[in-house]
Length: 299
Image 1: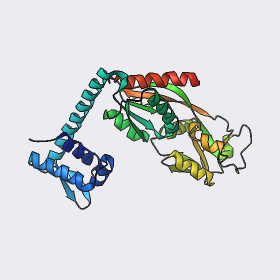
Image 2: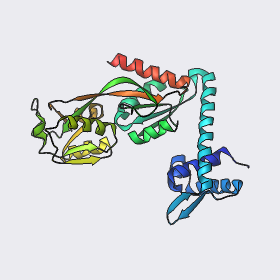
Image 3: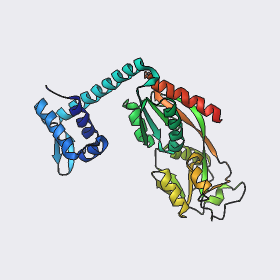
Image 4: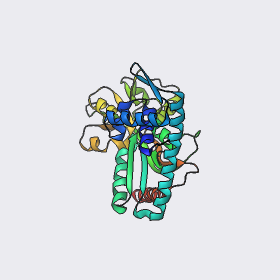
């Protein structure tokens, strides 16, 4: 079979998304270019790899087999690239980092300083939600991740590097702004804006409220990003619970206030996370050491 690595890369993206459009967006290609690469791969293997039923794409048995092998091949090529990068030392190489959206602002500043110190290291910086981040680690698509506490049921190593205080936020006009030691029962009159199920912040809040057996929320609203929560709180839709690190700008501009609620802040931690048994490149080891040393100076 006369198959190119590019054909496998494009097909894998289509198979993951089950969408030519989304694959094209990920690879920065046009949709016709993606279709052409997949058709050339099908011609090379001599058997259909997908079928389209209505607007939905489904992999054939051959497509599922090819997807499995293309994933393994890409992973092996990445490992080969990392080993070759090791020979270059920290003067070059590729660093793949996935970052939970909650820690994005702080992580971007860290990465900026790191890139100034190691200008020849190429960086892939992916900001995403917790569920996607964990999938990337499991699929070996990221060297390191910056996130909240990693799940215990995955083969991951997590090293804590910084406190992550969760706080209750309100618009400046809220009547509770300025009060001290606010009891939880005073929050019952407002809807509580929370992250989606599965996010690190949501997991922490569910544990917190589970312990507060005498406190029941009247209503809560689920949102899929911290930005959505912050903008909604500013608009007066309710109170929010977010990481203190995500509201630095809004506090400085006077657009949001932190309420002095009893039992808050809830202090979690940020972790630098990687797969157990993963062989980190010199670039990845350098970034890990840089993060751990940098936050020590901040603390």
